[in-house]
Length: 333
Image (cartoon, rainbow, N blue to C red; front, side, top):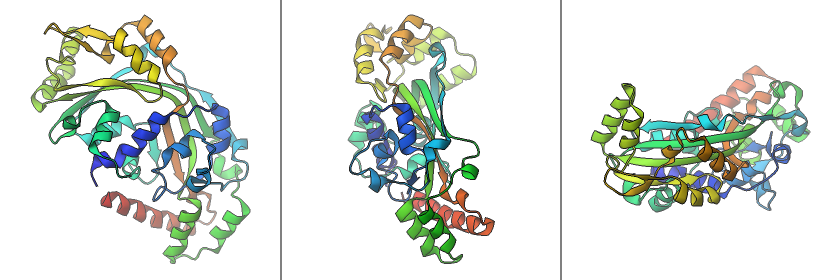
């Protein structure tokens, strides 16, 4: 399957940005079981605490009173230092950067598990660039302004103090080492991982597309302490193949605001929109922060449910079976 199709569903879900109270979201989602082999693609309901009719088919209630072992941390940072430039030599790297805050135990590239069939057009639209920009050989620079607000997480000793529901615990006890179907059946019914933590906030980003020659020129410039004026020039239409739209994970208001507040005059005499215009402009940073969403999921960590198994041998076997299935799924994507 095309890498573009693999990540499309998460891009769509992140744009949905369902607004919920952070503490309430923690009570709903933390500790719930998720089957990353089949259902993780339906990520909107998993992450946003959307209490809908489909919720029970997406996550599973496997732990007694998980909210009692949950804490909400304020992770808001000085928003004048949140602007980043990242170089991406290919699409895989672009996805890695976009989903940098997402972790799924047993895989280094969690976005590869977020698979569904979506067209190239839908994916390019979510990245704010035209379809042709996703072609072979293109290189990317992503300018991002990421503002995490709250981190909702389990206690560090969660697996020692929390208890599985009795029905789940009984199924673990009845598992026989060597019968793989008992593991796969359990995963289908209750999940392979559980939600250990997630971070709420928003990310504003702009994808710039380059031909290799200009991408390499920019990269070498940065390695040699590129000046501010050269950086602005290399981010301009004079060097980019395509200037992506400035996009927000959770706020349409941001996307409207940038059209009138982040315009830059190019050496070609044309104006263009650049997220980098926030650099050294605290007044603009204050304005955009006021419009950014505080309830979109910008980070997530799923841990393997087998950590709750008391027997080391059985825990190791369960994890090995799951690991084999995760690797097989990644190969077939």
